Length: 172
View (cartoon, rainbow, N blue to C red):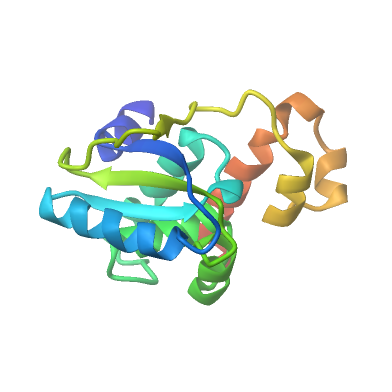
């Protein structure tokens, strides 16, 4: 299974970037244009909604698998990855949860394909698994108190991965 995931996500890179309040949407447009020009597909989301590059790696893997098997909700790899990364069933809910807006001050840039998008000054690669999981962030992500009770704090990241995988069930 790991080989399949590695193959499906070979070019994935994820960086965190600080932006000024009100500038995230312009940043998204600029990065998207740069990625397209370089032959890469990119996803730009709220930084607070991403829990390490493995979170995005799992979402991309599930998105590509859904598209390959004809179970996709979107024709775009980026939008399907957004859906899975959100742990939501509906694209509208996923967009609301994950998309940058005028209040966003931290974004995550995820290169989904190609190698044409390279990090700019100030971009920091995010770790595979977060060093510390922000419980308030997990609550904003939709993790319930009951779910928290099922695992210890250092394994809270697994709740995010469970949410990503559960999208296949929710979409049915």
